[in-house]
Structure formats: C-alpha cells, structure tokens
Image (cartoon, rainbow, N blue to C red; front, side, top):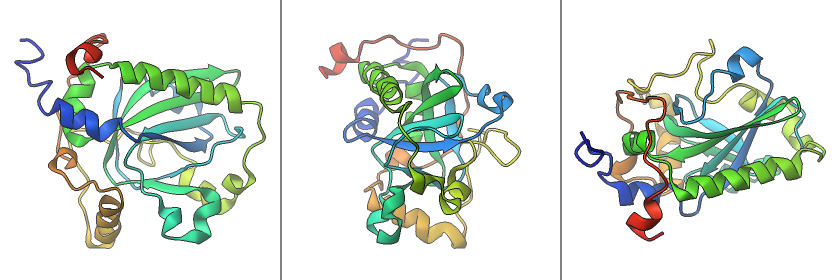
Length: 233
C-alpha cells in the first residue's frame, strides 16, 4: 500500500502549517540515568501525559540531559504571571505529541531534540522526514555548540523550577513512556488550565484533538526529503 493510499498525506498541509511556522526553541534540563536517556531514539513518537513546563531561556548545562523542543504552540505563561518571567516559563499542553528529531552528545552532555506535532500528524510524522526537520536539526546542534561552555542560568537552578522540570519528557514517574494508544482524561481540576493553554496558543482546531493511535513505527519507515518539491516550501 502506498503512502497516499494509507492516508499518510491526509491533512498534510494543515499539519505542516500547525507545526513549523513560528516554531521556537524551548529548554528543559534534567539529570537522567543513562538507562533512561537511552530509551529515547531518533524518529520516536512520544505522548507527554502531563503539562510540560519549559523555558524560553537557554544557557549552559549543569545537568547531563537537555530536552530541546521546537514548538509553535507553547503557551507563554510568564506573560500571564510576570512573577515567572525570570524563568521564561512556557508550557506545552497536556497530551502534547512530539517526535525525536535528533540526539546530540558533547562530552558527558546529551541533547534530545523534540519537535512538537499535532495529534492528527502522528501517521504523517511517523513516515515523513522534511527539509524543515533537517534545518531544525542543524540549528539545534548549533544551539548546544554555542551554549555548552556558557554558565547555567541561575534562575533555572532554583528549587521552584527544578521541581517542574527535573524529569524526562513523555514518561511516567516509573520512567515508562505514556502509550500512544491512550489519552489522558481531562478532569475538572485541570480543565481550566487545559482550555486556557489552547486559547493562549490559538490551538482550537480539530487537527490537535488527542486520540488513541496505533503505532506502526518501523526502522527506516520514512519518506525522503521531498516536501520542497511537493509543497514548494
């Protein structure tokens, strides 16, 4: 069955427009055991089953792992709560989906580069690697090259921030990946924050409604760098 027959390209233009325009780099540093960090692999799709706090500020690394996230839909919560401006506090919504674009190591530091993608883009991003991805990877690696010798940002080492960030993306407290085959129930306790982030990021279209997904990832399962020819971008 071809990619077109399999529905890979269904809503592809909407998926691309949701993902790439306005995408910005965000930072989340943490200390991970090697057995946990090694669970992340290039091309992997991830569901993050909690509100994902990240920073718009990037500096040197105190901890061994940096999750660098390219997202066009991170809510700038520091604009709502100026007290958190010094943390560059931003947040990706509950049940955000991400693709591991790259894993880059310098010495004892590891950068795991993630692309924030819409719920209905899982089949697409499972199969497709785009020209934009390659450009983003270059920028992500350059980011670490530039920052690796900088001092860490002291604000991001405060207990308040570490309590929100010093754990892996997309994993439970038991260091198990949230399954793509289920979604998180939106309870009354989190409904207001969930809706507020959607409104702040203008993310109210059907393209990003979390739904259970049957993961069909296979080694080498991708379509090459052809989008420039297809979409003229």
